[in-house]
Image (cartoon, rainbow, N blue to C red):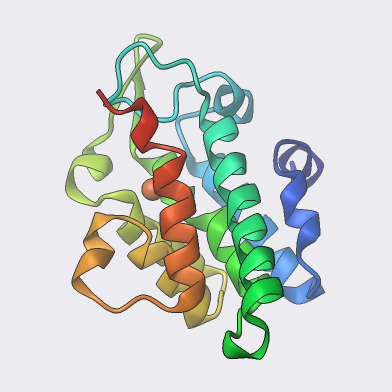
Length: 177
Ligand SMILES: [Fe+2]
């Protein structure tokens, strides 16, 4: 399963810190194993059940958000120099994990996708933090997961969380009806 996850998530190999890389990978492996979805579903299901007529898949959306996060961070580092400090490993780990909790939000009833009982009670930022904590991911990464969505508007985001939040939303809002 680890190799299968690395195939759908090649960006995991962008993580320089080996321990962090393994934790991120273990977290995804565990979530997929617990989920009602199969790993292959992630490359076919739409990224949101809320959007009609959108064929952008879950993995396309998520990988785009990670790639954009890295591009934004690189440009900011290049242009702002010492004025800004961005931890790329924290940023990448957080970006890869923001929607890992979504694996628990889906249910399959008679082959059709619906929102699960857990999904109705705990949106994925919450289940995502619980998952990340299970694998001992650092609080800076848990923060990105917790604050990436609208729930995070209530708090103060770190620079890595600001970047990931916006990268996620620009990959989502154009498809909103
Ligand atoms: Fe999300």
